[in-house]
Amino acid sequence: MVQDQNLRVLLARRPTGAPTPEDFSIVSDAVSAPAPGDVLVQNLFLSLDPYMRGRMNDAKSYVPPIQIGEVMGGGAVGRVIRSESPDFAQGDIVEGLLGWQQFAVAKAKLLRKIDPTLAPVSTALGVLGMPGLTAYFGLLDLGKPVPTDTVVVSAASGAVGSLVGQIAKRLGCRTVGVVGSADKAQYITDELGYDAAINYRTAGNLRKEIRAAAPDGVNVYFDNVGGPVTDAVFENLAQRARIVICGQISQYNSTEQELGPRNLSRILVTRSRIEGFIVFDYADRYPQGLKDLSGWLANGEIKYKEDIVKGLENAPAAFIGLLEGKNFGKLLVQIAD
Ligand SMILES: NC(=O)c1ccc[n+]([C@@H]2O[C@H](COP(=O)([O-])OP(=O)(O)OC[C@H]3O[C@@H](n4cnc5c(N)ncnc54)[C@H](OP(=O)(O)O)[C@@H]3O)[C@@H](O)[C@H]2O)c1
Image (cartoon, protein in one colour):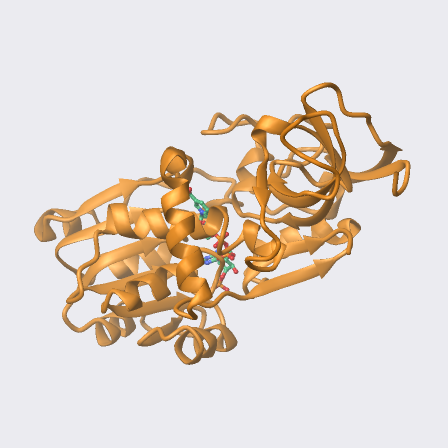
């Protein structure tokens, strides 16, 4: 045993609007022992993801809410410390919903074994994990891009958006990214190969800037944010555009219900299609997605960027920052070496 105490981050109360540090509590408990069929995992990297904000509310969604006093849920990569399952041995690297804690007891059948020789193990939470698969299936299955298309992506420098742009680019599409800072704009064009970047925070007239970057109209809009960015893209749709509703992060901290979908006359006149998307629906096709993403990563066709915060106790502040656009790349917390 490495240590017998387990630092854990719990949901202390439900946030109203933007989360604050008081919504979380940090406790130290004894490390639990695994039962037959379970493994004890020491978490190495914790993934911080926008969907976690929804799980802090007492609201029905595609996953149940976290209860007050429960450990914050989330994906993590860790090392097996003790195994009570024939499928895992001590020292194996695994990925699963292990939570905001240093140690987790998990059902072996719910864990994915990670090959640490293929790529850094943290990529199992990003490019070779849930965000990568979201970009892959959301763009290819719902966006259905063809080489002559212009693809616009919001939150374009992030874990999902950075990959959507690169996958669209390797298909030959024109790619336009909407981001929240000059650094992010430079990164997506210079490093990721986006054809154009728009900073929505400094744009004078977002509708006009999108028109200038997508003069033939937007054929595919991969929407990660909703709100005013999406309104401006809707004003620039091409005929038969495909709109993938992947995320609406601009509204996750809202205390008021949005009035309703806006600009729907633009959908009508352009005969466009809007479709919601949840990556879990593609679970049976994950092996195909991971095979393609690993191949593209190995031959340098796609790049990724990580924003790594050290120490589990810093997870709440990092998560609060994610919802303000402070992260630059896939946000991870390094819990152990
Ligand atoms: N449907 C699914 O199955 C699925 C799966 C994974 C993720 N998602 C969604 O995909 C989106 C991106 O997730 P990610 O993990 O890749 O996160 P991310 O892009 O790495 O980080 C979130 C980014 O969102 C942007 N943002 C934050 N507040 C915003 C606001 N008020 N208006 C506009 N942009 C804002 C910020 O970038 P800027 O500085 O550029 O604004 C921030 O860096 C999220 O909406 C998430 O919920 C959906």
